[in-house]
Image 1: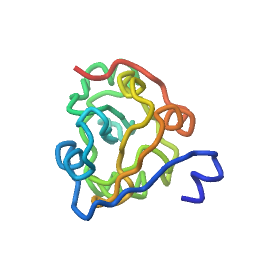
Image 2 (image 1 turned 90 degrees about the vertical axis):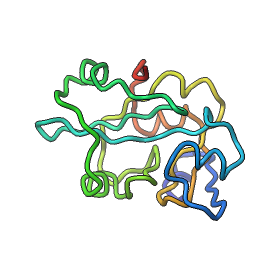
Image 3 (image 1 turned 135 degrees about the vertical axis):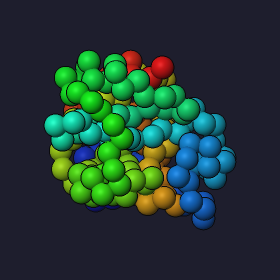
Image 4 (image 1 turned 180 degrees about the vertical axis):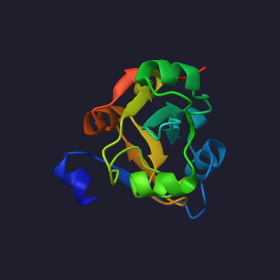
Length: 148
């Protein structure tokens, strides 16, 4: 939390007392729409390169489009141990900001349609309420169309 305060981010951590490993579970647990939930998914290329893709709701990341935008080839979801090593957080609880290592981040433009979104809070039982503009600023992220 101190990182967020130092960066001038007004984030709120919420823990409704249940695991929220999916968009549906998180929306139900928080009492918000699925469109307000974001997922932060780490992809790994065949050569080991990484990119964090952030999308809202039930949108499915188009990996071919993500490959074209990043120049990374053969993108697949990173294995849980790679997610933990690269971000410092477990898969299923990865927050959209504050990662252990600097990552290339691409945010789908639809995330910007809301003033606040709810993303992973570092643990499967915790979610973070944050402004999409802060996600982009803190990650120096690119905003693109990456969802089918």
